[in-house]
Image (cartoon, rainbow, N blue to C red; front, side, top):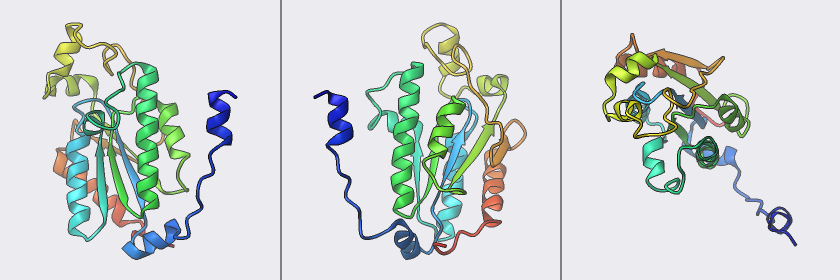
Length: 206
């Protein structure tokens, strides 16, 4: 018996009696994932943190998944090759899906450079639950910021497969939101997200 056969044929997921809609109703909110994608230093983590603060003040139940944080724990075994990045995105998507099932509004700040991988994550969610937010800073702007010195190291050849330098970033074609962080400071960008969210029903589970 092959390992693949064992994994596919010998697992029987338990069907839980408490359903996602019931968990959402207990929190009086519509769960979703806010997926912030963009280059390193575009402002993803900063903006996601400000959005979470705003949602928390409004009484929402949230959790923020940050790419660097996840790579120190859950995904610490992964490198930065195309295959490893794909697996990184897959794992984060599965975690986000479980948290949405738990009734949370999940914020994900992750470069997630490949369009096809983001589309696979979107397919995990019901219609309207996956909100792709392109934190859009041109490479020159992100590289000029470079708060962690990563671009400088990549230019010197010390970091391989660095997004924007020797690995591509595929921008979203039709994101739910695009934030021009070359023109917007983080507070204004976060407010744009909160304003957009205020136009959709977040109360209730229906």
